[in-house]
Image (cartoon, rainbow, N blue to C red; front, side, top):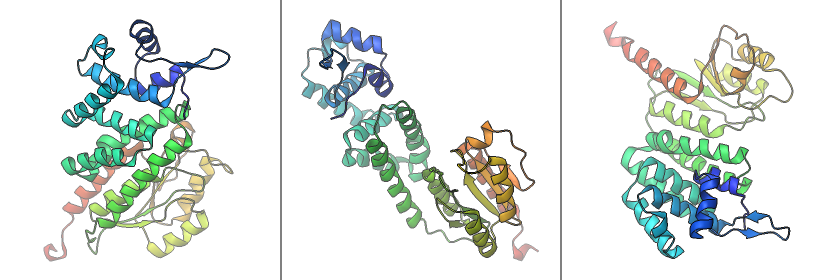
Length: 306
């Protein structure tokens, strides 16, 4: 059983701590337990109930009315509301609850419904990325455990792997070449996998080398694959060398390719970027770059036009 403070409940549900306490005193909606030293704490059951109360309250239910309902009825009405009113916020709340319950079926229902309505690319951009941002905040504040984080990221990773494998668009002979990798100790693999999917979907040739790649192995792969672009992420500090040194060595290791790099470390450090290195501000600028490359490729004359 997980144990939560009132601050955890505020971060997870978006309801202010003073509002939760008011509901406790006035309506006895959420009843915290207490330790032997009289410190208040909340359980998984309290959290689930508060999630459902918050959802119904935002939908127009009065707290005084909810206070008279059994918890089973509140849960049933919240589930029915979620099925009928599929806003992005309600879906993200449903994903959060699925994560806290370690409920794979609940995650699948939300994910697949949105994918069926809007496609894989939109479910990641509209739903999963905002959800991951929320998870990151909860993880940093220690409101969720490592098990919760691992559970949800592995489910998302599996979805991305399936999408990549089923994206069978054959690259053109003259298609651009991208090499994707993460340096040692970098953990942003979900973003890299999603970029792999986006590139393959656009008919770009991709070599995906994943996480934990040394510069020696990168150099060898670049010599063989001859990429036009190499993409990586530097979100976590490098343990054994400055970012400036790493970028300079990477720029040399990839030969004539252009290094595209995103992540927090290339923004919080003062860096002189080598000539063949371009900094990208996260996924939005990366998507803009892909669109510009697609436009340039469409404008190139075909052999029959020459």
